[in-house]
Structures are given as C-alpha cells and as structure tokens.
Image (cartoon, rainbow, N blue to C red; front, side, top):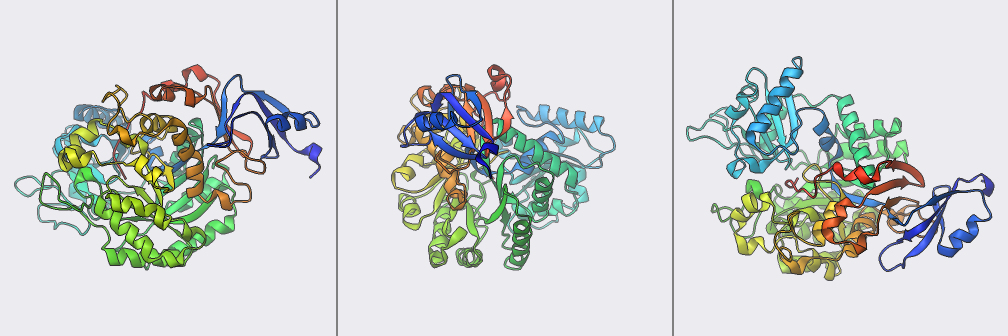
Length: 563
C-alpha cells in the first residue's frame, strides 16, 4: 500500500501508558490500524504524512481492557424481558414481572435474567410469590449466578416437576416440607428439566442481545472478551453477528463440555471450530472449551475439601477427577485451550490435577490452560498455577464484604475460611499468570469498578476500613496490567500478527482513552473516570460526547454471584 494512502492518527497532549514497566510517553502514532511509533518519534513521523491529530486534553491513553470471563448473550438478554437488575426486594421483582406480562399479553412464556439471589433467605424463592404476579402463564427467571432458576407454579407444572420428581443427576430441586417443589431449580440437571419445555429466546433476540452487550463493552473501554459459556446453538449467533458487522469487540468463544454428553459432543465442537475458521473474521475465534468442576458456594454446590458449616456435605463435583483429566486431555489433544470453572478448593485441586495430567499435550492453544474464579484454594495449590503455567482468571469485584458475601457466603464457609478467599496478591507474587474478568451478568462488566475493588477490597461505602483481608490488595497499576496484558495473554494476543495488550510498534491499535490518569486516583474515584473513546485496530468503536455524565450508567461497583 502507498504510505500516503494509509489512514494515520496522532494522539498527543496527554499521558500515553504503553503498559506496566514500559515507561509513560506523550504521543502515539497509528497507521492503518497499527501502532507506528510512540513519543517523540511519533510526533516527528507524523510531520511527514497526512494525519488526523487527536488532542487527549490531558487524558490517559492505554491498551484496551480485556474481559476475561463474560456471557454477552445471557447478559444482553437483561434488556429483553422484565428488568430485574437492581431490584432490591422480592416484592419489586414480582411487581416488575407483573408489569411486563401485562404489557406483553401475547408472550406465552415470561422469561427474565439476573434477579438478586440474596433477596430471600438462603437463596430459596417460592413459586407462590411469582404466582402473585403472574399465575396463568409460565414464568422462568434466571438468577444472576447462572446456576439457578426461579419458576412460578405454572412453569413447574409444564415441566412436570412435582413431589414425585426424583433429584436429577447434577442438579437439585429444593422442596417444601411436604415434598412439593419450592420454586427454585439449581444446577444443570435441574435446569435442564425446565429447558426441555421452555423455549429459548428467538435467534434474532439473542443476536440483538449480543449487539447490545458489545455496545456496553465498548463504552467501558473493552476491546477483547471471552465468551465463557456458549451452548452449541449460540455459537451461530456469533457467526451471524460477524457477518452483519456487529462484532465491535474481539471475541473468543468457549463451548461447554457437559460430562453427560462428552466425548460425543467433541465432534460437534470440532465442526464448529472449522465453521468459524472458514469465516476468517478478524474479531472471532473459537479456541477454548469450558468445563465446570463444581457449582457455587451460595447454592452449596461448590466442591470443598472440608464440609460446609451449614450442613455435613462437601458440595458437588460436576466431573469426577479421572473423568475430568481424560476430558481435558482429549480437548488439549485437539488443540483447544481448557478453561475450568473452579470455585471450591477441592474443585481447584482436581482442575490443576487435570492440567498436570495432560501437560505433555501443551502446544498452541492447549498450552495456555485457564482455571477461572479460584475463590478458595489451598496454599499448596496456589503455588501450582505458576509451576504448571495455568492462567488464574479472577473476578476482582467479588473480593468485598457486600450482601452476597455476608448473607450467603460467609455463613456457609465460616468467617475464618471465608477470609482465605480470592488470594489475588498471593497468586501474583507466586509468579502465576493472572487475568481479570467480570462474569457479567453475574457482576458489572466495567473494568474501572473491578480495579477499584482490587485496589481496596472495600465496598462502595468504604467497608471495612483498610480493606477486607488487606494483605491481598494489589496496586492500581498492577490491576491495569492484569486487565490488559494479562487478559491479552489469556486470549493468545501474542500469537496474533498484530498483538494487543500493550502499546508497541507493530501492535494493533486497540486503545481506550480515559479522562484522567487512574494511577493518581483513590480507588473509590476510579468508576467516575470517564471513558472518552475506545478504538479497535485504530477505528473508534465508542465515543463519549458527554464525558461528565458517563457515570450515570452505573451506581458503582456491584457484584452478583458466580457462573
């Protein structure tokens, strides 16, 4: 290409942060989507070419944020049904379901997502409560943990879930004293009973939900994201989004390995990968297979080495250790990245065992295994992340004493064990590779909010003074590094012809422009630092015309529950 025909942009007039340890500079030149030069060299080279000059006005230009664990389609569906996010009582949820049903009389099933699981004691919600809002049509609400459904009586009837329904494999049906189902379904086996009769959202609705989610991501400065729970029928939504030009964020898909259907489903996964490779879209990859080692503490389905305080059991293993090791080896042999959900310390251990068992297959994507969440882990197992080259993908927003921690988690673990959760700094100092994600819609996808908690471990009210387990606090620049370079490593950016995650000549110009240098702020101030613009390969994917008003979008850092 003739150099005079290349699109060129010079960013100047602020702080340019190439990445941790790389030294701040004052200018950056982008040519044809790639970083051409930084600092004085950028200014000098721009003098010789036609270019657009963008004055940062004292702002902060940095690599785009990565989102290492998210569910964009599920999260985007928040906008296509009853609006449940932010509701603070059971009565408010029921009223909203009633409102939506009255305004949509032709919808046979009322479906919503992300209700607050801490609004009922023990997370146990009654079908009869929803009946007060809608009794003549089935209502199915997905909790923000992704592991729970709250259903009304009509939905239970249509799914033929009664007192005579046996407990499903890999699932739980909480019951009343007389044996009748309460209204809550937990984990895959129970959720599948409802999925057998409840129709999924229409394809176009899921496509619109994805587009809405990606718009939100770009407004937060996100340029790469991991879809961490794509069913086989949802990967085609991503393909259609790519064809329609809707992928404003680089997306890597993870399909689910269900122990009830694996290894038979592996052939379908291989076919899906070939379909995505044939599309050859620069913003869409499928490198990853997702496993669940356990459930969540809030449901007492996370798998623990020692029993729960509330009951003499250890939770639920989704895979038995030997089966998980064989399955992880099978996907690594096909060149996939294994990505394992592990909440409890037992789940973390068997996940690391599976990675160690298949270590000899570590080539390409298979060489970058991930364990996500790592809520509880023994010190012995924390040290194994660095030894085995396993990326620890963590959710920084969860490391706070919010209502979910105090109402649902601590009573199940006990205070002493609860204080061993989310050992971010311990992992970082061990030499392990870290990446951050939100698990949205389980919690806010805004990296600024995640950084605020990682650097303080306090709630938005500043509780507790000095932070919860303060020895696990990390610095703001360290959190920025994990959200950029760390997530880029998880996403194989270094293997790309134009890498991202740091700013260097030849790298893709995946950038976020913040209003102020976040390193000079108190953690509580970070969510109010406006995103001025986001760029993917040098092209703007988001521009904020009302920077002073941007933070009206969220009230502040909010955590939901794991999925």
